[in-house]
Structures are given as structure tokens and as C-alpha cells.
Amino acid sequence: MTRRWASAGYRLSGGERQRVAIARVLLKNPRILVLDEATSSLDSLSEALIQEALQRVMNGRTSIVIAHRLSTILAADRILVFKEGHLVEQGTHETLLAQGGLYAELYETQFRSRELAEETTTV
Image (cartoon, rainbow, N blue to C red; front, side, top):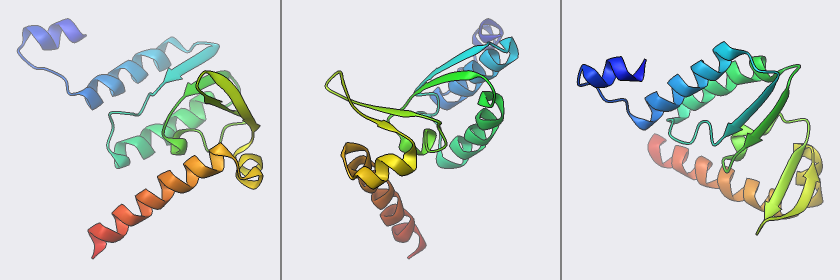
């Protein structure tokens, strides 16, 4: 697929390459799904659409999602939080927020900055 585009002189953007890679994986229908920063190059709208599709695909299968954007993992059954290569917290989104540890700090930072960005664009 990529060769045909490349030979025609068309180059895919980072976000387009990510969407194609996700589509290829989903077509293979693996028993175990591993996603490493699967939405990092996508805009917010594309990320939301991909997340919605991935939620349906991940349901009922083992999925390992590596992410820095917490919006990617909010619905996970279990979240593992690593710092400097060591597991420091684990639990559900709600449990980790209630603990007030590193995950809660990261969540607050990411979602506060998102809210500020949205406020800035609406003013």
C-alpha cells in the first residue's frame, strides 16, 4: 500500500501513517493488541474518532496500550504507572485519581492545560 503512494509521489503525513498502521493491525484481528502511542500524531478530533473505534475493537481482547496522553487510557481496566522504569502505581482511573499520586498529578496537568487551551480558543 505505501509503495503505491510513494511511487506516485504522494507522501503520507505522520497522522495519516498512524491511521493506516492502525487499520492494518485491525484488519489482522489479533488476539493480543499492542498500541504504542497510537494516537500521538493525530489532531484532537481524529484522536477522539480513533479512540472510539479502538474501544470497540479492544473490548473482549487483551490490549496493551502505551501512552503519555491519559485520554488514551481513561477506560482501561487496569492502568500501570511507571516512573524511571519502575512501576509506582496501578489501578483503575478512578482509583488512581483517588490516591492522589503521580497519575492524579499527570491527569490534573494534562486536562488543566487542555481546558486552558479550549478557553483560549473560545475567547
